[in-house]
Length: 251
Ligand code: PGA
Image (tube, rainbow, N blue to C red; front, side, top):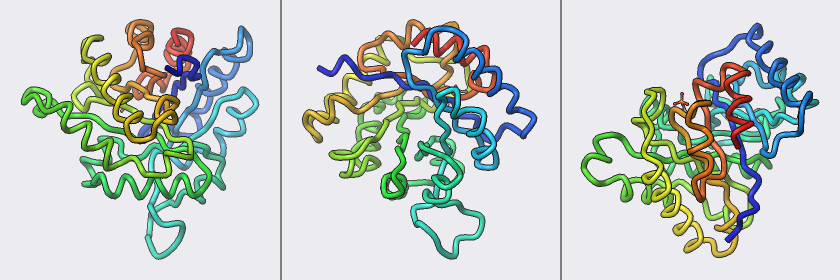
């Protein structure tokens, strides 16, 4: 069992943040560089408009900058879209794909999410592939089936060779202040790990499994200590440097 996976704490700013918000990144950078180095990889995924400017502040402090989505094609006639090579050119190293807000707002299917993940990998970046059930699906006892289907269909075959990250984010926990019980998180992450190992063998042991959904300073220590939770995808609490740093310190 790969117990030595370096955890990843990734902030997802969603559609929040203007240039003035970068003072929070300066604050986080100074927290990270003033004490002991963090025992996890720290990443921030701002809106694409801020990737380049954020990178100038983040990179010297060892903070990785990522994006929140991309188009599956590398270029072409797709007005308003951004491709993975463009995000790489702007300084992104990670790209979130298949976040539930995109699956809902933009009707993204597992197939499209897989194509996006492949585009991210082809650009030399790492995808954070999101999966997670709705409340109705959990209440109907279908959480495992739904998440297993999303995992199988959204994670590309290239994950056998290249670096991918999976984020389990129950839709009903995102932005609500609700979280699953630790037992439920443990059960889901164990199931995800087993499926990755069944599909990718030893490589499946090394794929980072993040938990996301109302991860806060108050619950981070407990959640991040659960077996097969190799870090977190943090929404609301990533907008404030002090909150994100508290979560990083818990990792
Ligand atoms: P939240 O969002 O931490 O605000 O619940 C998590 C996410 O959507 O990645």
